[in-house]
Each structure stands twice: as C-alpha cells, then as structure tokens.
Image (cartoon, rainbow over all chains, first blue to last red; front, side, top):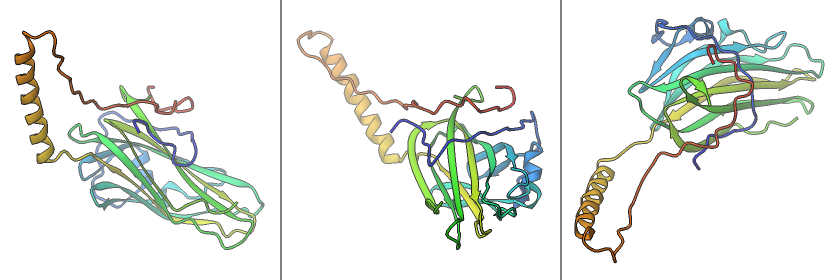
Length: 143
Length: 100
C-alpha cells in the first residue's frame, strides 16, 4: 500500500528521548524505567524513546505496567501488561497515551505491524478502544 | 460505546523507523471497562535466497539486453526497477518528540 496506517484513530504523544541512554534488555521491566530513557531490544528491533501520558486520574500507572518482548511468527514486538481501568464511573471518557520509537538494530526495514489487545466490558454503557497510529521517521522525527 | 475490535494488522511500504502512538480509551459509566494486555508487533520484510537469486538473474539478463541493444535504436529494453515506497504517512502535527 505504500503507506502507514491508522489502525483506528490518531493520537498525541509526548516522548522523552535521552541520548546514549542505557538499554534495559532484561525484560520484563516497568514502563516507568523505559520512560526514563531506557530502551529494549527484542529480536532484531530496538524500542526506545518511550512515553506515557496518563489521564487524570490515569487508567494505569507506568510503574505498574510491565513491558516484555513478544514474538509472533516473523514479527517481534512488545506486550504491555496491567489493568487499565477507569475508577471514576461517571460516564467520562478517559484516555492514556503510550508512545515509543521502533528501529531495526541493523538498519532493517519495517514493513508491517499488528496491534492486539483484550478490551472488555460487561455493562452496556461502558466501552473500551485501543488504537495505534504509526508515523515514519525522517532524521529521527515523525514524518 | 461498544468494543471496536481486539486486533488489527497492516502492511506498508517498508520504513527504517517508526514512531508508534497508542491510545487507550475507556468510557466508563458502570466501571466495567478494562484492558489487561496490549501487544504491538512489527515485521521486517524477509528477503529470501530465491528472491535474491531471481533478482541477480534478472539483473544479468538486463545487462545482456542492454549490451545487445546499444546498437539498435529500434528496440527498446524494458527497464525493471524496484524501490521501497514510503509515502502517505500521516502528518504528525501533534507529535512532540524531543528535538523534533
């Protein structure tokens, strides 16, 4: 198709980048460690410049979110685990934002992505949506 | 607001880096909305040995045709090209990556 995809919707992310940051290859790790400037290597890919912007109150706290590598077929990536939930019960729509940069360790090109989640509700007025937007990078910045 | 889907995948023109931005949205009247795992995987295109061999054969054939055709203006040699196409990436108007 020659274009990146908007799997569901668009999003805004504030990311903290730290030059020469140490890697955190021992997984799983807390997302708070990664937001602090660390990176993760999974297979032939490097994940870095993590950010997490929670609502008020957040649906989950970075320190509680575990990050681990995952391999599915010839694809590798990350699995984030925690309980994202709203505690307000007031009908408000709460949104947290997660961001990171993925690059090939040996300049590999990336040509596909998959997003999976297990959103669930059991009351008619509740709803959950997970969406991912992918931006190409030019000189390290979203194009 | 119903649950939209639990997985989605896509293929795109290979890029050498991506900024992945994920939104977790919960509309919560009764407090039952929940997510426990989010998986984001990425695929690097595999170049097989057969594909490389076919490319080499095609290249050799093209060079041979080019040499034969240098003296023959009447015949055109179809040039085959391949390129990684990267386009139509969504604008990141709201992205605030440090240094960008």
